[in-house]
Amino acid sequence: MDRSLPDYSSVRPAGGKRSGKRDRILGIFLRQEGHLSADDLFDVVRREEPGIGRATVYRTLQWMVDADIARKVDFGDGRSRYEASYRHPRHFHLICTQCHRSSEFLSSDVEGLMEEIASARRFSATRAVVQIYGTCDDCRTGKTTAPIDGATTGLVFARDALRMAIATERSGLEFYTRAATLTKDQRGRAVFQNLAAEEGHHLGVLEERYRELTAKDPQLESRPTFLFFKGAASGLFDAGTEQLRGGGVDDARALLIGIKCERGSHKFFKRYGERFEDSEGKQVFLEFADEERAHLDLLIREYRSLRQRQGRPRMRGRAVAKKSEKPARAARPARSARSARR
Image (tube, rainbow, N blue to C red):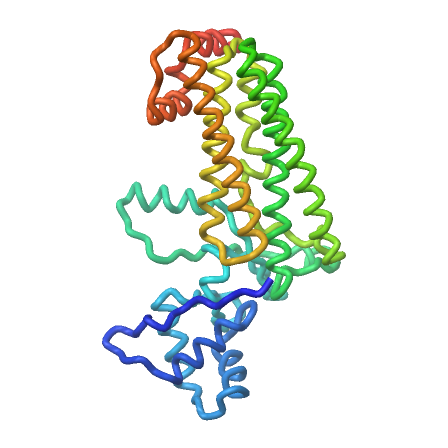
C-alpha cells in the first residue's frame, strides 16, 4: 500500500526560520525504513544532496527529536539510532546484547501501566522509551528467525491485527450463540441469533483475508509478534461468555453484558486504529470498530425496547452505559448468579 508522508511544513525550531536544507533532510529521513544512525542518514543525504554538510544533518536530527518527528534509540552498541515517530504509535524494543539487533513490539498493557503511573504522580509525560536488553533466541539457539523490518513491518502489523479481529469474532460468536439459548424473550433471542450469524459470516471473511495476507510472504506466520494486546489476543468477549456460563442471567442482564462487551471492543479497536499510519492493519482496526459500534447501537435499542415491553421506565443512553459497566449494581439475578458461583 502506498503511504503518503505527513506534512511537517509548519513545524519550526524554537525561534528559527524555515530552512530549505532542513526540509530536504526531513523528506529524505521520512522515506527511510527501519533505524538509522546519524552517519547512516548523512550518507543517504550526501547521495541525494551533495551540498548538505554533516553538521547540518546532525542539527536537523536533533531538531526532529525535539519536535517529536523522530525517536532516538540506543541498541547498546555505542551508536544512537533514529526512527520516524509517525510510522506507528509509541512502541518498544527488545535488544540483543550479542548481535545488537532490535525487535519492535507494541503493548497496550505496557502503555497502560506507564499512563497509570504518570497519572498517579500527576506527571505530564511527553516521551517514553522502553528497551529490554538480553539475548535473542537466534543467538541462544543458533537458529535464524525471520526479522521484522522494512517492508515486512506492515505485513506483520496486518497479520497481528487480523489475528486479534479473528479472536474477537470467535469469542463474539460463542457469546451470542450461548446468549440466544438462554434468552426467553422471543425478540431478544432473534437479535442474539442474528448477531451470531453475522459474527459467523464475518469470521469467515476475516479468515479468508488472513489466508490471502499470509500468501504474500511464506515466512509471515513465523515472524515474531509485534502487537501484544492481552485481552484482544484471546477475544474481547471471553469475560462475557464466562458470565453467561455462571448461570442466573436473565434476558436484560444478557443484553447488558453484550453491551459492555461491544462497547469495550469498539473503544479498543477505534483507539488503536486511529493511532496507526495508513496501512492494512489500521484498516482492519477501524473497520472492526465500525462493526462493533453498529452492534452496540443495536443492543442498546433492544435493551430499551425490552424494558418497555416489561413495563419498566425507559433508560437513557448514559444510564444504560453505567448499568452495563457496573454488574455489582445490576438486577437481582446477577447477584444470585454470583452467590451460586460461590
